[in-house]
Image (cartoon, rainbow, N blue to C red; front, side):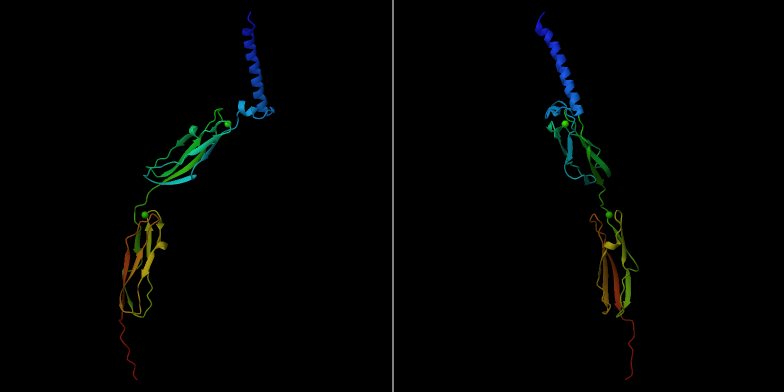
Length: 213
Ligand SMILES: [Ca+2]
Ligand SMILES: [Ca+2]
């Protein structure tokens, strides 16, 4: 009988015993050989790190380019190429979406999943509307104070934007003439309302008073 052929199965048994013992010791934290446990028994999960912002807003109908993520592992090093990306982003429809990144190292340890919120917002192309308060045409007596009645503005997206109205009031109530008060406003998307104007006429309808000397 050949000694070598008998030795091989025994060597295999010894190696199995040694290897499983090391794994047990590593699992119990009792193997005091530097890095040995990391080499044979990697229990450290890799780390995925988001690139770019954690929340991104995208106008509806425009392409979305994701900044991605990177991943590293204590044993495998840079494993960015192994990242699995899960995304439900649909820029055709406004709403909230998510892009998730996870990665697994060679030992099968999965990273914590990191994710990014992607908000696809409807693009506002509708002008706000300005509505005058009071009459569009006003007559005031000269030398009497003129108090403008103002206007209100609403937008389909921004709602009440009256406080953003820019009013230009040229009325000089101490001088007879025709004046205008103009109102302009824009919504948050930069759509300007059609300008509204109130005409103000300053007149003198008061008869002079004759005072005897
Ligand atoms: Ca690892
Ligand atoms: Ca609008």
